Length: 92
Image (cartoon, rainbow, N blue to C red; front, side, top):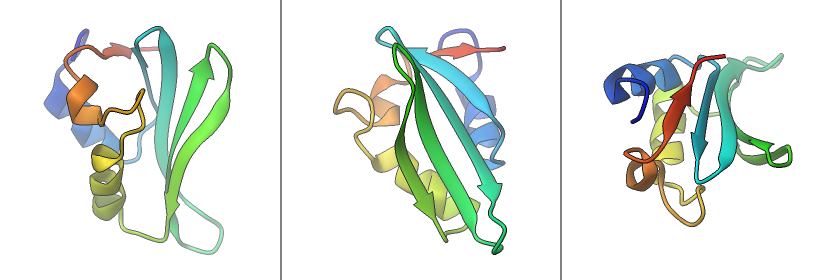
């Protein structure tokens, strides 16, 4: 991961922290949080070039949610692990 340590980035994803990163000219935002009904929700949004919710998972633990996220081909048909060396962590 450019501009950051991948292990620290994954730890922050696991903890549900708000993270902003870019890949292939697109800006992404990931976070996890507890819903009003007590379920955990993890989501991926694309912020640029246009904003929209790309993916979400609800009702799993933060560990299960992270594992699902890391395995999904969400980035131009690639998984996070396939793009991580070309992704840049943006600290805003």
